[in-house]
Amino acid sequence: MKEFWQRFISHKRLAWELAIASLLISILGLASSIYSIQVLNRYLALGIDATLLTITIGSLLALALELVLRSVRQSIALWVCARADEALSDAAFTAASRSLYAAYELIPAAQRRETLGGIGTIQQTFSATNLATVLDTPFALLYLLALAFLSPTILMLVLVFMLVVAVVTLSVFSAANQPSDALAKTAASQGSRQQTLAAQPELVRAFRAYTPLEAEWKSGQQEQSLLRRSVSSVQNFSGNAGYSFSVLMGFMVMGMGAREVFVGHLDVGSLIGVNILAGRALASLTRLLQLAEPVARASRSLEALGQLARLPMERREGMSLPGWSGQLGFEDLAFSYPRQPTPLIESLIFDLAAGGVVAVTGANGTGKSTLARLLAGLLEPTRGRITLDGMDLRQLLPDWWRSQLVYLPQEPAFFDASLRDNLAVLRPEISDEALLDLCRELGLKQYIETTPDGLLMTVRNGGSQIPVGIRRRLALVRALASGGRLVILDDPTEGVDAAGCQAIAAILNRLVREHKTIFVMSNEAFIISAAQSVIDLNQKPCPRIVRAAPPAAAALSAQEGGNP
Image (cartoon, rainbow, N blue to C red; front, side, top):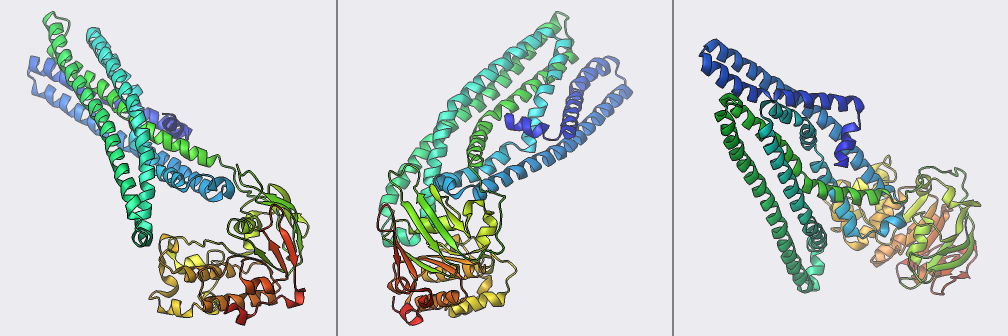
């Protein structure tokens, strides 16, 4: 219930308005009981139609005013919850998009999806309607006070029933917590299998992955079915128990009330009013208790989001170097992943002049992509530093630094939007003609022209519908559109055909002529032979620095590029 309280007090003036509205609604809720008492005691006794008309009009006015107040309270609660939901959503987005890459990557992807998916559960549970339910509960004391005035004996009976209902309901929900937690974990695992079936049809069919997936799928479905049955049984028992207690209390109140009428402690009108008040008091408690299970589930989602929000964040402040020459340096650079027994990179000392070209070679897993991420500022060195004109990269504003990059990751991905939105993400103001020129330069003219919507084509599922070689070249277009000073290309020719390699080589030649500082992570012979320097990551733990051709020879032959 902590989240309800935080939402309630988030705006002090509105909190008072909500509290006053709830109090008035509860006071007006007494009208039905008063109406029953007055009709049975006064009208039936006197038989005056004017009395009945007056009582009825007064009760209808009370009902109308109660409905108006409920509408006003709902509007206020909607505004308060909308602000809280917006803040929660913004915090989740910030944590997912601006937390340190290394810390975020430690969380499994399925867990990240489940955590972000929990936002809907939180918003649905801590809604305006449920906030109103919580606010109504303490003011239900008014019904109990009215009961005490009319019949202390029946008040004691109602209190006993409310206590029993509270104990039974909370015990039932406590018993449901374990299967609910297990169901959430099983649903996350099943969600990963659903993702595979939905997004990897080629894997499922060509490699007969349906064989191992089928066993896991059926096992997951059976486990989910058993857990759902368990949770449903508990919820059904809780619902039946609440209904049974409500009916039983009605019987007991009427029976005890009839006895009170018989001995002269209560009149018939008051008996009907007492029964209405008792039902309202119990209903307020029951509605609150019914929130226990969804609140527990939403609280787990809140805790998961809290863990995400507690991840260390990227710097939002730092310096920029408008006059950066393009010079880079590695000073005793070392990096190791958490729980990794030995460093991936150790004691890397290397200086690169502005406009230099470096090829970084090594077998799979030796750290080429890691070095690319270190250069991009996604990862930070375990020891040592990367410098730009002598300044530590960690002192720079990350957003400024990434605006200086022409970065092609090893596994390029896109977000679901138009192709143009993806290609221009680093520089939204770039013209369509400039993007098309880059596409033509990379040999993508035919692909763009044969696509019905051209740059407006919709990219889905991270671009998985685009052929790998085309996707890599489109990712290079996106990188080049930034106009950055430092070029970082991670395996640019992987999955690219000979014509594409030739186009990439021509692009590299142009970048060399433009005096860009270039790092290419590749084992391609034509790239290695043309680079000024080579960093060999095969040698562990300290990379081997190979110095080759002088700067004047740093050009990549398009002809060589056609024969990688």
